[in-house]
Amino acid sequence: MNPFRVVIRHRNFRIFLFGQTLSLIGTWMQTMAQGWLALELTNSAFLVGLVATATSIPILLFTMHAGVLVDRADKLRLVRIAQSAYLLEAAVLWLLVATHRITIGSLLGLAFLSGLIASIEIPARQSMFIDLVGRDDLPEAIALNTSGFNLARVVGPGIAAVVIARLGISWCFFLNAVSFVAVLVGLFMIQLPPHKPHPGHARPWIGVQQALRYMGSTPRVRALMIMVTVYSILGVPVLALMPVVARDMFHLGAAGYGLLLSFLGIGGLAGALSLAAVGHRISRTRLLLVASMTWPVLLILFAFTARPWVGYVLLLGIGCTMILNGAIANGLLQQTVPNELRGRMMAAYGLVVVGLAQVVGAFSAGSLADLMGVRATIALAAVAMLLYGVWAFFRRPELRTLEDSDVRDLPFRSGDLGRNEAIEALPVGRRLASADEDLERLKRLADRRGPDSR
Image 1 (cartoon, rainbow, N blue to C red):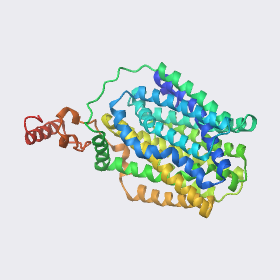
Image 2: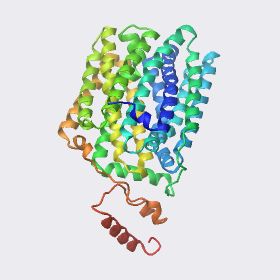
Image 3: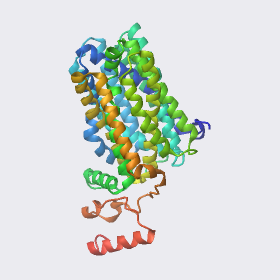
Image 4: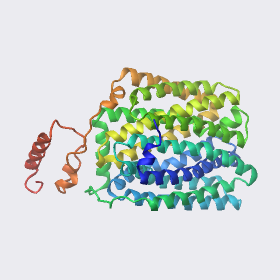
């Protein structure tokens, strides 16, 4: 029941987790300060949501193509480059705020740049976990990485609130820039086997098509991705609107805003550590069902509470169930998909969890909050989540049988078959009964294409 056994067992993951958690503390400081700064500059819930949306637009537009790059390139090298770019972006934001030259336009532009970096960094980092710990320890590693994320969510906003009160908001961005040094030091200490590139497609769009066809032709993966999409879009308003929740729902200042985020993070940390501790001892699909039903119920209660201390308690449960939902879905997806598609599937996951959640969820939440108030916006989204969850888990069989999946790695790589784009565009993930059937199918295909294709 030790949740840290994966950290003890794998040196590379231990180094990565330590540096990444320190960096995420700085990132949460910047996230809190950026939301509060947007509210101070504009006094508009819509523009607060728009800043969050600007971070995610590049992920929505580019991350699937970036996933093709991740499947071909050295993942560790890509993560190092992306973290260095994050450092520069945070330093520029600090200079603009410190010199009082920041505007809502420049804040939106830097948020867009951060999203552009994330469109590559997210799939590269997520798909690198299997290289750090192996397939067997992958679920526990994802849970521990999520616990580091939530530890940062607890510590980061609290530090940010103190820094804003004592030193000013610009120093949150400076400390975030410094925190990226920690993760870069760790990344350069990690030692992985030399990268062996897989044969790639002539055009990135072919690789994107391959991933989309795989999702479309694999019922359990399709059902899981739809569930993640719905819960990400409808569950994000409480996060995107937290500055408005603090000020308008509970009449709190920056310190109270940081406390709300900290309680959300404490709940998430508890959920992630519990998931890492139980390992495979309990059914993850059943735990996913419980978390997915409880999360929207707690959000509905949160929307109608008027007392801050009740909100803090509810946020503990919201953070726990939200993280259980996301971490279990991520782990099941990574254990299911073939290695050759891992980067693209993690790109699709990031597109949904960060891109669609922010572009559709945060933008819509900001617009609705301006029209009907923040309470009604959160409650409406939570009711829609609950209705979908009841239908998806109780009326459809796919989500209840995710742990029964037996998906093998791809029996072939399309790059091995020549330059014919018709062959390259064939859907992948079609699992045949045996290796003999795989071979016969390829032989028939080569006969139809002619001797060059063989």
